[in-house]
Length: 200
Image (tube, rainbow, N blue to C red):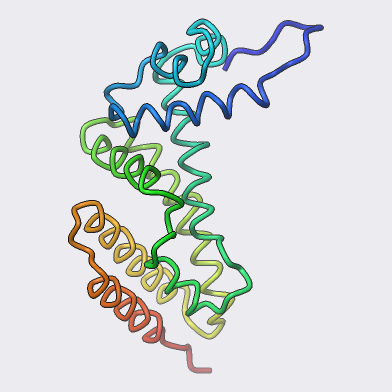
């Protein structure tokens, strides 16, 4: 990202989030392939050159979008409702509202599809999962089940996340109706309840 000249007050703190929100709107409307500086600038209500000022290339813009906007979206999902019991938090992952909006889900689905063809997108999504979300969920589950082995915790988290991802992918395809949502919820609780404990 480009930095402002010395002596001028930086507006990066407000401009960059505006640009990333506008990028999300363009992705929902036109897909990732349709993201251009001109379209992002139009949605953000600013000049194309200003977007270029903060992000020197389209790849830089998409990289920041994935790491910051999409990273925050996933973290919000997994950290929501910390006051609930673990079982209630697992159930909430399959409930309406797990994603703030259908648009957020569309953005995620676009990125997953693009990762099949784009090594950079694949690397960034893999980083979010392996360096952020999976370790955080494993730590949460390990704290809840201190007698479980780290391998069993990791296996349980991975199975739950696979179910979560599949459920919402089916949701985009209008397969996941209320009955199937309850099935996914029940399956998630069965997975959680099978977490074995280490015997001392």
